[in-house]
Image (cartoon, rainbow, N blue to C red; front, side, top):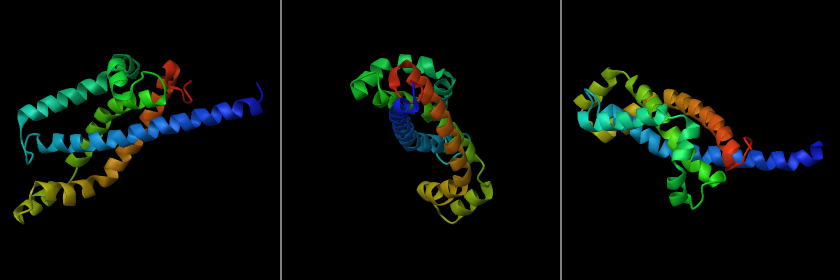
Length: 175
């Protein structure tokens, strides 16, 4: 096969991979960021300390992170069909990629937010700052560099997952 025959196939595959990674990253951040913050807030010593909620969310995150991606894709076929209407193709892969990426990113966000200096948290609380003020004005801005590093790691993992997804019918470069 010559380059002129391969080039359109490669271009389409790159666009499919970009589509899958972009949309799964969006969903991963939209769901994983609040989940990671919630893990910190409901944890021991957190502002919204709730052991039951923290243990349930923590268990879901741990289980989600521990399932190999190829098995996760197969398990999610009925859910993917319900959400997207099909179980093959790039759109279907976005569902599995997001479900695989959310727990991974949530744990990285939790780690990043836990690194914020406790003195800053106490200062905001002593000045009467509430939970939303603390999260939006202190925790997220202070943890942002680590969150961005975690997002970079997550995107790299999603690119690898997209190759696995492509190998079993999602298209993209893995196909």
